Length: 125
Image (spheres, rainbow, N blue to C red):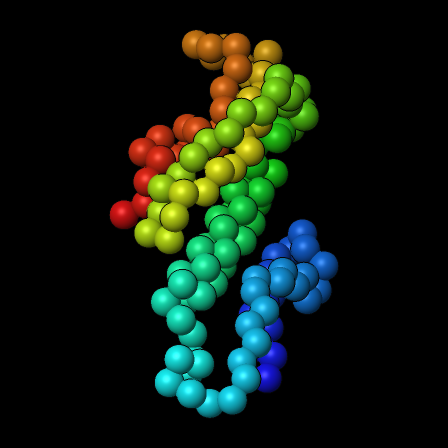
């Protein structure tokens, strides 16, 4: 028997039925050591599901930050860095773009990283 674990992500921006493969598990005959998931398989499945969900959340949030909320102009992109988030299911590394502030409003800094500002603690409760 082959079991395929997938996540279906449905957002306004995604294609209908945007399917992300998580893991494929094969089982032979029923024996005590082949019943259900092993602890390692369960941890891997949960970690990968968590990663897909967090990636989607971060992508959706960053899309809302790519334009100035005051004038609507597209913000210039300075570069990227990685933000590490510690979750119950492991560490996740997310690409975090750095944007220039729009000149239409005064700001104390020239650039900012929306993801780093949104997740300052870098760990989930």
